[in-house]
Image 1: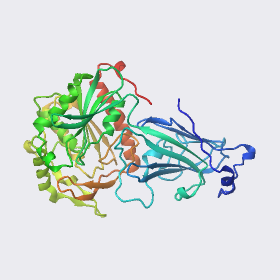
Image 2 (image 1 turned 30 degrees about the vertical axis):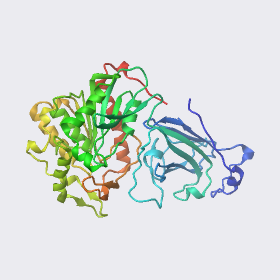
Image 3 (image 1 turned 45 degrees about the vertical axis):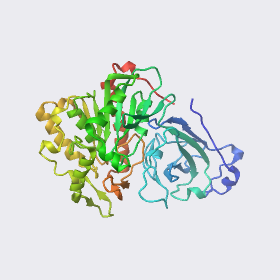
Image 4 (image 1 turned 180 degrees about the horizontal axis):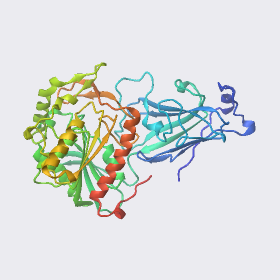
Length: 458
């Protein structure tokens, strides 16, 4: 059962210093009570934040604070007024200002941003899934916008946000030249499988695969763009990705005929190429987020990147000097040699598109893919989720939005500020809706029956 943790520091001293002169006196027993439930949960679970025992009509600020693995501080805050019973309920009461406005149950998480004075170009990502994200939530008197570290809160609690549910097993994969991390759900199985591929940033990114395992899928996060340029250049489509798929497929806990592909950005190019051209593997379904069918990965990855580098002259820059890549693949080619032949797709396919994607021409790509599949007679396999004012980085729900962030260009190792696009509120809505519908899509096509889907909770 979730617990309510209340920390009240130097309460009588603080009471005397309240700027709005409302004294929450110990004589009348009006200690503020801050509740966050659950205090330990998965990152895709909603939290309930309630403040009680306040004077009626008191202005307060709810504030969240997280220290990232890179030691950077992230915060969000909302302005509230207590009701006639002295209560603030974040799920139903409207924030009057702050980093989010309106009734936003998860605003204290999705609207997080680096605290003033932080390094530029930051992006909040969880790299160690064996530990939780710890978020401190506090309530302050008055409507504050800065200086939180210099004030004493009325009460503070913390909540742990986990990608890994109890019983999920993490296994390092170093087989047949393939590198990745396999996550196994708790229980005897068998389970459906997912091969999870991230984008052009490279490295081994585990948190989405870990969360998929927490939701009942054997999932392998695949490293295929190594920071070792020599290794990346040698990776060949016909061997590496098919070997990775078979590692998932042949695990004893996996239903061998129920394995999906999940790709984001450049990972979409890989996934679509596999689905269309591989004679070795047959994915049951495919989820593609913020990607394109242009530049198929049907050759060594080094060659694919050389082609992209040739088109680098199309790179644009916004008024702040941030890199805009979306024009690199425009106009969408008509030559089938320069894009995946979507008429060859023979499994259910979900495309996820942010309409303000500034990194890749995903809107134009989705339109062309739809036309190709319609002409080929396989459009019935296609599901498109299209989100106005969402950007490129559509991540698991409640992940803070980053319109731009630091990025290392894989072809040159140059550090730039990449413009991803999107706006906080619509992007947050897109992430929540996309995750829910992606899980439903995977369950529909991978699980034999709805009753066989396990429920993972902390």
